[in-house]
Amino acid sequence: MDGATRSSTVRTEVRSLLDGWVEAVTAQDLDRIMACYVDDVRAFDAIAQLQFTGRDAYREHWKICFTMCESMAFEIHDLDITAADDVAFAHYLARCGGIGPDGKEHLGWMRATVGCRKVAGRWLVTHEHYSAPFDPESGKALFDLTP
Image 1 (cartoon, rainbow, N blue to C red):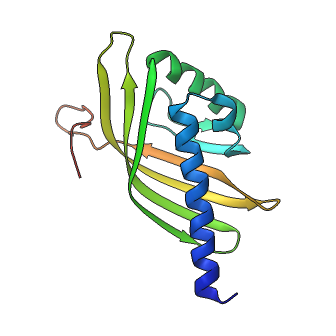
Image 2: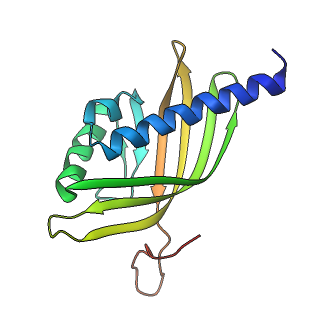
């Protein structure tokens, strides 16, 4: 397989990992979500803490997220993947949120960067970073911006 074909195949494999993760998130399937991460994942989520280190810590965070939303929504937009044989880097805009306990929809736009590594023949997330732009004067996140 030539380099361009291999690169295309790797990007397809990483996209498949991300698509499976989105399916797991919208289904609120915690085991499927966590199966997408390496044991020592390092995550910079936009909610609650500065960072999460390790799958167990991130799992606890996801449990809390599920209590905030009766149903989850997550969409990947403008995905770009750069990949080598065993390491890949993806960035995209995410529209995410859900229906809160109050019955209202709470969705907003976030920025995402994801680092992946091929481990034992399988792509897994090693690093994840979500952020929201903010207004420096008020300190408030700007979730209503649109691409």
